[in-house]
Length: 601
Image (cartoon, rainbow, N blue to C red; front, side):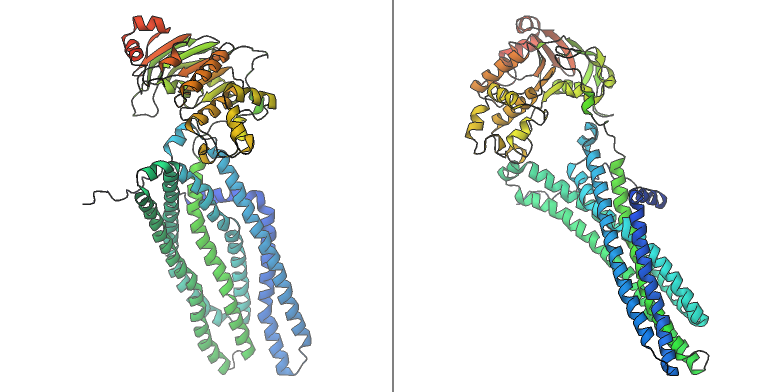
């Protein structure tokens, strides 16, 4: 019996909020269009010129027929008609190009804003929102913004102007026939307006499902080897397919309602044509109007198809774009950090405030979100400048959170975290982080070349500094083996490197920054004994002139530390050297007896 469970549905994204009101949507749309208002105005002017050419054609046709009836020459009118058609087409084509280019510029600006905002999100926001959902807002949602930002605006304006102008011309020709036409158009148009909210709802749900597709793919591709090793390809495929089917289903609904709305204008004109033909034929037969007037009126009636179509398309695009704008606006309301600036660099060694940084925690209490248990409870310790301080304790004791609070990835719920005697909340992020070298627990490596990864935190590093760091971290032999040396691509997330090599790259990247404070979160967990020994020597050397904080699970890492902070259940239970703690702290003695948490290789 197959016990595999069906693919679960995705939970709503934390960015899902009630749609914006019409006023809020128009205000948000105006913010995107405002920088390009002159280009949109030019496109609108060109569209109006083209519309004016079309408006004059039925009158020119009436004049031509009247001249034919009177036997006058028609050469001048034919030339004028030709010029009108060519000129109107050329102007409209130019206007269309201007609008398309402007639309692309609007999308570019929106994407730049969103990307810049996403990369400045607070860690707390990033941790609760699936990256795939955020990426879909940068890609598919901004694509919908393209249509509503320019085409909808101009289509609505030109459609309205052309409609009013055509109605005025039709009133000039015959008021009775105009009344018949408007009765039919209003009746059918009112019915079509009822489907517009359906388009908005279906589009919003479709875009949400597209975001779920991105979330599912990001989940599977981010753990690709695990998916394959678990034989989970079909299950993960089914999970993404479920989201794709939801997107398809809502997309089909939107298409259905769009088809209804799009055919309404043609239906209105066709019904109006039959009504005008009947009433107009009777008026021609009774001699109330000449046949040329009926023909010109019918031409205006068919001319109405285009402005009415533009109005319908504009409303449809607005409904689609409103859903996209609402999703984009939700991202823009997420909490972000202040952008770091190069000028914010904290004084480094050899400048006005030389030497390693000091760190002090004063009764720090912290939890990641309201309702969750506290990770830290009145944590206090002090690390003077220079030397190595190791943090040990059972899993979940709050060791890595120490680093997160120092880097201001999160901020203490209560108490203070001080660097150089100053609360980290009083430093600008640029000042604080420029002085810190940070090696994460999973030692991430970015797609790109080895060189790009090494200089990622220190783009101005010299070749001599690079060679020195490569030698100290034993990466020089790796560089010699690579086909293109430092310029060899390392693959997605460093997939072409071993786990130990990725850790050494992360350590080299941090050292190349020449930090005043070095944070190592289990930085040697994937190294063999030889490379671990070499790295311990490097860290010991760095600790002579830099403050080094280490989260360690190996006894070999902590025995040489100047001080060891023992943590348990979010509290500091003891501080001392290895020898002192073996004698004085039962938990540390037990951990040391079992080689801490992971035996050294």
